[in-house]
Every structure is written in C-alpha cells, then in structure tokens.
Amino acid sequence: MKSFIKTLSIALGSAVLSIFIYDFYFQPASEEIIKGNVGASLIPANYTYNSGNVAAELTDFTVAAEKTVHAVVHVKNTSSSSSDLPAFYRYFYGDDELPDRIGTGSGVIISPNGYIITNHHVIENNSEIEITTNDNKTYQATVVGSDPSSDIAVLKINTDQKLPYVFFGNSDSTKIGEWVLAVGNPFNLNSTVTAGIISAKARDLNQKDRKNEWYLQTDAAVNQGNSGGALVNTRGELIGINTAITSVSGGFVGYSFAVPSNVARKVFEDIIEFGDVQQGLLGVMGQALNSEMAERFEVKETEGFYITDLEEGLGADLAGLKPNDIIKSVDEISINKFADLSGYLASKRPGEEVNIIYNRNGKENKVKVRLEKINRANFFLMEVRELTPDQKNEYLTEKGLYISNMNNRWLYQKGIDNGFVILEINDKEVSKLKDVQNIKVNDLESILFLNPSGEKERISLEY
Image 1 (cartoon, rainbow, N blue to C red):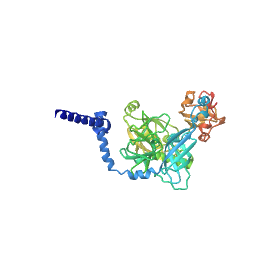
Image 2 (cartoon, rainbow, N blue to C red):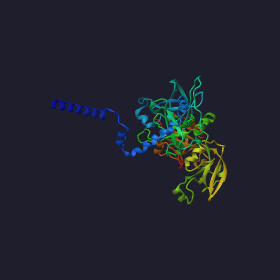
Image 3 (cartoon, rainbow, N blue to C red):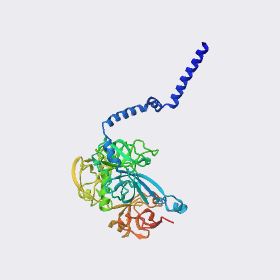
Image 4 (cartoon, one colour):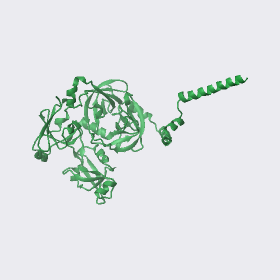
C-alpha cells in the first residue's frame, strides 16, 4: 500500500509539474503577466486605451474606410542610384556599378480621370513611376507637377475606366480630438487602415530642408510606405496627406504628421491651372511670441506674431502694418506661432485678400491685406529668386538668379551659400524662374556662381 501511495504521489507531482511547465513556456501570457513584466507605470495607459475603445465603438469607421481604401494606391518609384549622389562619388564608382533604387509609398486618387496626389519625396528623382490600384491593376504614371516646399506632388494615370476617388474635406475645420483614419501601404501591406485622433494642428517639425511646415499631428499608426496616403475624417473626406513620423527607431511611436488637405488641394489646383504653385506673400518678418520673446521685445502679449520688419511695397506695408505690431488672427484663425500664419497663407493665392486683427500699443485694430505673388522657385535644394533692380546694380549683372535659401549641403560644403547668384547652368545663362523649373538633377553638368564679392566660381557636377 505504501508503495502504491508513493507511486501515486510521484505521478500526481509529475503531472502538476508538467502542467506548470507547459503553462509557463507554451501558454500565451495573460494581461496580468504583461502588466507585471512591463511595470506598473503602464497601468494608467492601459486604462486610457480601454476608455478609448468604448469611445471608438460609438464611432462608425466602416463607411469612411470603405470610401477610402479603393481610392488609395501603391506608388513604386524606380530611380537611378546615382541621381542624387555627388559627381565625385559617381566618378569613383561609376553609374554602371550602381543598381536602380526602388522606393515605395502611397497615393490618393482625387478625380475619376486619374489624377493622384502623393508626397514629393515619394517620387523625387524618379525615372519610372508605377501605380497599383486596390484591385491590383497596374499603370505607368507621369508627374504633372511637384512642390518640394509643401512636399506635395501630382501624378496622372491614363485609363478608360472611371476610378474611385475621395473628396476633399476642409482641414481648417478639423478639431483637436476628432477621429481620423490613416489609409496607405506600410511595408507594402496594401490598403492598411489605422485609426486615431487629431492630436495637434499647425505643427512645425523644424526640418531644415523644408521651409513651409504646418502639419496635422495624429496618433494614427503610420509607418514606412504610408507616405502620400490618405488621412480622412469619419465621413471619408480627405483632410490630409500622410507625410512623416518622428521616431528614433524608424518605426511608429505614437506621432504621425500630415499635410493639411487645404494645402494639398491648393497645390493640386495651382499645378493644373498654372503649371506651378502660386503662393501669396504677406510681406512681414518677425517672431512668434512667448514669455521669453515678450520680455525681449518689451511687450505684454505672449501670443501672436510680432512684426520686426516688412518688405517694402508688399501687402502688409501698403495696408499700414508696422514693426512692433502683433498679428493676433488672420481670417478668424488664431495666430499663436509662426506655423499658424505660414500654414494658413499657404492655402491662399496672390491677389486674394485676408482680414488681419493686430495689436498696436495695446489697442486692437483690423485691416484687410492683399497678398502678393512670391517670386521664387526651388532648384537643386536651393530657393532662388529673380534679381531685383537693386541687386542687379549691386552684383553688376543683368542676368542670374539670387539664392535666398541654401539647403544643398553638398554645395554648401563647397562654399556656396545664401547671397550667391547663379549665372549659368550647363553653360546657359539663366535669369527667369522658368529657366530652372524643368531642369532635372540627372541633366546637371555644371553651375556658374557669382559670390557677393564679385568673384565667379564654376562647380562641376560630373567628371
């Protein structure tokens, strides 16, 4: 009997131990184990997440998703590996040794006849663009136009079929906390839909290579391949073009950014109607106010745009605005930072008027300002302008384009900077913006510069 009990005890003990080992190694971890492993600090986040689920259940995302997924496309950009490399690199390694580079992203069909909006950086330096629709049909696309400053590009595909498309919404009317969907092709996972809310508006990421920044910030998951995809509201209206994330690892960490639809729509319409982007210029220079800036400028206001200078003869100057005035709102849009001002004006054209409320010596004033045309273009990561009469006298030249913003690091390292003048490109004189707007990077051979001291320097871009 004792032998039997001993044997039974050993068997039961082995069974319990086996169950424990199986549970520990093979069963999925429970919620409590996850909380224990990640630490108590994550418990409040879990609570917030569960509350969000309840709110999400009250919002129907299916209609918006159904309206959008068929209008979001996969964009494949094939480009020469040497197209964006310095000439000396191509000289040592040779163009033939470098395979073509393939980049992927997303795009949004915005008309039944095949117009598509995507990001400029998705199609930059392209030699071939392939579009795949949600029904797995493939088309070759052409670039109708592109605007690096807003990171928006317009593509066109030709088809006899009427394509599904999304309608533009009004991004100015979006509210913080509003539900949104991000639709795109992250990691080539076609037609992926994620949900989140508008976390902030007119967000400035302080990127040196992009002058104009006025992003919508959301917590909808966006990853590599989402660029150029749609950000829509719960009605399925396009309110943004997904563009960027802020991440150390390169993956989504809770923040994503989209170009507002009002800006994207304006860029699209300008490119279709005029061939390039028409930007209205207010003609003010200054600084967004905060406590530190208010103390520096000796003003009581801590919100608004403080004018330090004006461009003579432009709208703000002609309307009577002066240095030390504080812009509080434009067309009832509150101005609390520079991105609020630049972002709203980016949706306006030359000749349009805006209503400005400003503070002068503690008194609120109203004025109507007519926006003027911005006389500049982007070329080879440089912002260039046509020479003014005064600049022609200063530089002793009738030809050339003035570099107002240098973002080309390779040229900068060679000593080329703001204030230089481009005299020739590929041995041809330039003087008008249209002279550089259609030049491709692959076609560049040399640029002749004139520095502020009157010295000329030719930079060779191929060997």
